[in-house]
Length: 575
Image (tube, one colour):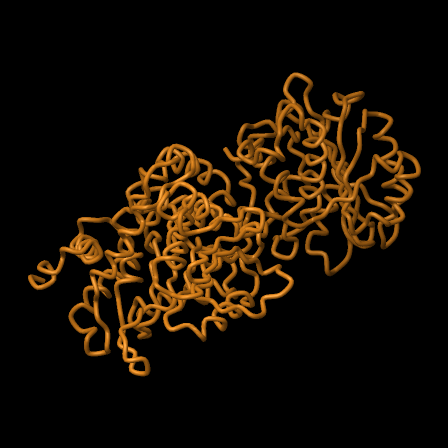
């Protein structure tokens, strides 16, 4: 250890020593990365490796030219934190002897950086991209910020372009063409552009550096493989991946994550692969503030503890919020599906009026509908939401359910006894025969439209051409019956809004037993960017009523948009 301390003048080794000796709190995987660095200082020469602190410092010095552009950091020089110096310095300071070229080249070809959100990954990556453009000495360098969509890829590129414009030294060398999303250096023919997997063609690339943003959001490995293959003509190319933890364990991101863990644990020796994975450890209490820094090395700098506290409080009450908190803010890989609604929270929203008496109280009130049609032998749900005039966020919920009579005795229906009990109380309506009689549904919707002030209703887009939808359009008007998708794009906003209103106890459903059962059943599919959608396959039972409630709330949100801009300002739907 004395020898290591003597070498600790460089910031990379100093950070590694501080972590290993317990002066800096990190998770196990970061500690393993630091132990790897220290171990290679002692034994790396045996594998043709050399630590070049001057090369590391050269890269770190480059960052002094860069200024930030967001919020309170606008125009502030980009002073790297010790953990950032460790990442950048490690990637650019380690060399390997290349026998074919008789030269010391960069050791690491892939840098996998998995860190919780808001820890400055994009800003750091923008600086890396610029260094690879003008500081790496590569003629005709091609640098790309890459993502699933070009707009996402432009986030890092835009940050880099702003850094150039704020630096007199860089702006003399780098020409920025924002309209074409191009930066280039005329002196040596290098360029830096954003690149999306949705590009018409990815042929002809000669990649010196690819910064792959939000790797967890990549549904396929295609873009990664194209970029990786396109580095073959370069002497020391770099694949620089930044991501938070994801949900899809069949993805390219989880493949890289798993490989990173194996490298850090020493089960695989790959001297070309660098990994920095900041996450809490197995067994850590996610609500213990002392462990949050493990996933958030920028805690107190770009990550504020009050924001984490607020999200942790919500995570204690809402299962999907817990998954989001674990994945996005503690960098823990979670499942793609999860239970959604806590029944204690649901029961606190029953409101002062029982579902039996609720209908009479709602006569003449303005409302919005959601109709979840079933297959002919399943349950159909029709839900109306009634905003209060004095508080548009507060809603009363009226629901109706139908099932064909045959389902009450069917051997394959494990809920048949429960169906019978609900039918006796009127909570579930039974239509004759073995298939749902859609005449009953159309009749009820039209009756409700006249009993209440029905503004409009959503119906599953797949059923938009169904006979029920067509008949309702004929009776109510085409503009009153709207097709709604069932995926992340359509469902995320109203689902998050339902969560928020439930927490505020503003969803008065009267304790309807069928709707409560479905609230306990529903599971959701989680997307890469806090998206969510109902997952009927993974749910424990029927969920049609909750789906219809989400669709009805969507209509109400759209009509009260002026009072509360849910769709423009996503922040208002996160408690």
